[in-house]
Length: 156
Ligand SMILES: [Zn+2]
Image (cartoon, rainbow, N blue to C red; front, side):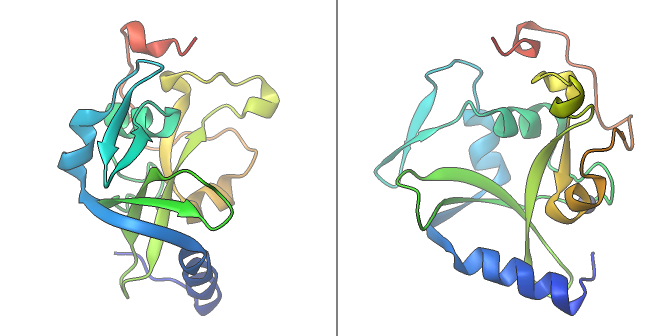
């Protein structure tokens, strides 16, 4: 379990309060729904929700653990930012004290340095580790990032 500083906890709580949330789903309720098809959507809570995003596909291919600190994404929330119209599925972990930590997807080789939108160039990172990594090129626990060798590797 991960401990947060007071500043980190406050920032994450503020981020959570800015969301409009409909429903929480377990990992195994969502992972089987994820597709690579461009138009893949499912009906959840009377919303048409995309299930083909790069981040969802990364969690399906590489699992829901942060590649750096190992914290585990434990549920998806169907949510939107206050200023967005559409709901989407986002993955969350929790700190030791129950503060939600968003799980993000990181480009191992940053896009700014020519990194591709390709599952082999993606790793799950929690929000806090992603902040540490920023624009550097680092790969952690490479055994967790299995090489993906099928048609889903190419996004376009
Ligand atoms: Zn992490």
